[in-house]
Length: 308
Image (cartoon, rainbow, N blue to C red; front, side):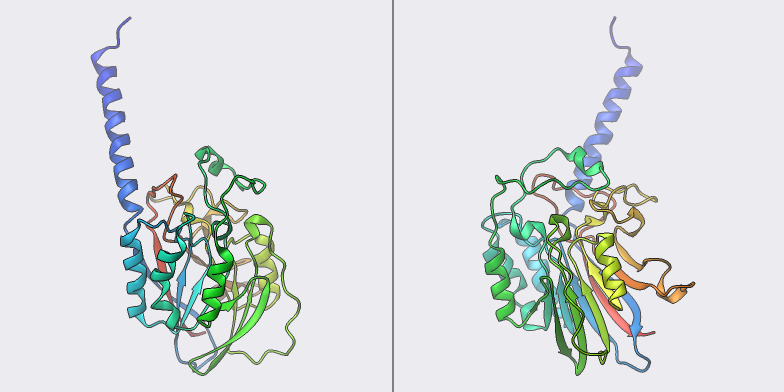
């Protein structure tokens, strides 16, 4: 039995829509956006503080447009730069990455690592990402990336390495207490011990690559005013008017990107226990084996911190 004209037209239409969607998703993955967000987190009468949040560059050596775009962010003159990891997606990505970050390294900064700072991506079944948490044990065949060299350069530039440790930065005359963990997606997180001194800081900032609930709970209990994270890619392939379907961790999809509260309501709409501000970046890149985004543009965020 042959296929009728109506069925043929339907199949052609489906194929055309699919091709159009793929073309759009490939283009959107290189349509970088700067988000601007205001966070009411500082003490009364404090001057605003501008924090540039970078995440998930997943850089490969041929991405000249991304490199130029990241370099241009220095023109924003942020008070602080925070990099939440997954910077590299190729064994030769370190030199172009350092070129991209070079003008930003002139500003105060802090960083943690993600899995794609330690291991290069490999082809995977994309259906895995429909699981609530798509982790699997570290594979020995994943090529290793120069995470140690990257960390050494960033530390030499004065950026604070928050790999399972605390530190302090003075920015614009204000003391900022920092706490961070190594990548929870690889189960490398070891939350550091209690701070040595009572709070005298204008801001307490928590930093993690993957926003797993156990880490967010510890940072909330630790007194962080604001937590910065990445990893989720904002869902990467989202449903218009609905949002993310997955986060690639145990965070709920409603918090896949943007500014939210943790563990409950937003801190400026608190009901009962006070929550911590949480900003999750949708990030600037993708795996080179899945270079698409849909309804989820790649991004960096300029957070302007203002008085509560």
